[in-house]
Image (spheres, rainbow, N blue to C red):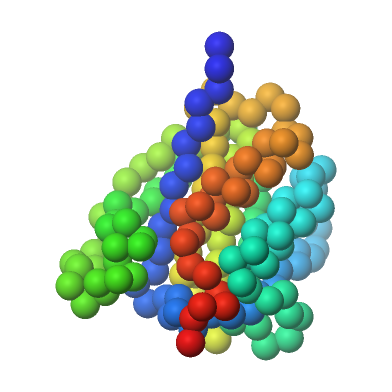
Length: 162
């Protein structure tokens, strides 16, 4: 039996995507801090992908804050049915900017990456990857596939933006 994967993303119509050039990670603190074993691998892969897309990693006054989480167990996620991100970016004024809710089944090993506009203090994009049959082997191969697939949903290139 082979694993099947599901990858999707949502975005905010209020995002200033063509202006973002820098990013940093949100650091978790406190007793409820996520204890996933592959935290370093996930963050390294996200950083690599953001830099490939032209974003600079900065620790002060950055444009985007990045949060991520790998989930143990199955859960439901409410996302949005929206125009393809690239289509919306090209024709923002022409599209109906509504948020049509859709529920997704997410499974063990799901990874969610969230990008937040630091100045506006709002989520502007999130991408998620899950397996249809769960992820029995949360390893770096899966991490690389998941992060690459998630960022394939985010076609913005930081250095070409003005």
